[in-house]
Amino acid sequence: KTSWLAKLKGGLAKTGQSLGSLFVGVRVDEDLFEELETALIMADAGVEATEQLMSALRARVKRDRIEDADAVRQALKDVLADHLKILEKPFDVGHVKPLVVMITGVNGAGKTTSIGKLANALQQRGAKVLLAAGDTFRAAAREQLVEWGNRNNVSVVAQDGGDPAAVAFDSVHAGRARGMDIVMIDTAGRLPTQLHLMDELKKIRRVIAKADPTAPHEVLLVVDGNSGQNVLSQIRSFDAAVGLTGLIVTKLDGTAKGGTLAAVAAGSQGTRPVPVYWIGVGEKMEDLQPFVAADFAAALVG
Ligand code: GDP
Figure (tube, helix red, strand yellow):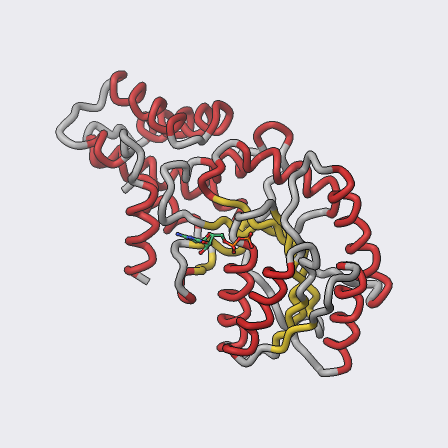
């Protein structure tokens, strides 16, 4: 646990004005609050969340008569953990079989990497996992997934070229026929502005429901933690198109923008606070971790 927390902490501390450093050898006065406010904005928490956090922090400092900077640091951790709690939700696999999971996101967000990590983690817990190479757009993406499946003993449904919706449909049927616990359907990367591709995503979702009217049970958006406030518009667009049930936030080992999750939790800019199931803190298999608000807050504040 310590090692991934350290990676998260290392990444989040990359901001020039790391939150933790603000508390060293200072008095608790208006200057400190102003610097904290600036640091939260710099970490991409956005104006709404920053205001909410600062007013909660001020109230707590007053209530508890806090006079020591280190106690303010602890109070900020607590306030942030409370604020982020709304995003915490365990990823529940056993309630339906097979659990059908559709995975979406823009190019380069970390979809394929996260699917590999997730498949591995679930398989280690004893689940039978089937992957669907729904990115029929790039042959390389399909090959990458097939090869990954071979190496890790995970079955992959793939088709040469063809229709991603058909691949998705086949995989749900295959998942049921083969008694799989989980079917994870990869989709090609796309931007919210590419409307025809967003329509294609809606179609994939509709066709999945033809194979199983209760599916997809989970629709995940993979977002790059470095995207900052851009994450909000991605959530809004994908949510409007296919109804998101959860997020995977990647690359938190190398970003100074960890505050973005505070903006998501605040429902900034009309974004629904979609739960964060997993966070990515590196490129290795074990670098996908469940999101825990208190741990994240502790790592961000330092
Ligand atoms: P896709 O286009 O969404 O499928 O993105 P990929 O899965 O191919 O990932 C794009 C790049 O990001 C690759 O070089 C990955 O190794 C890298 N990547 C993915 N997740 C993480 C993460 O949590 N941390 C770091 N440092 N790199 C990551």
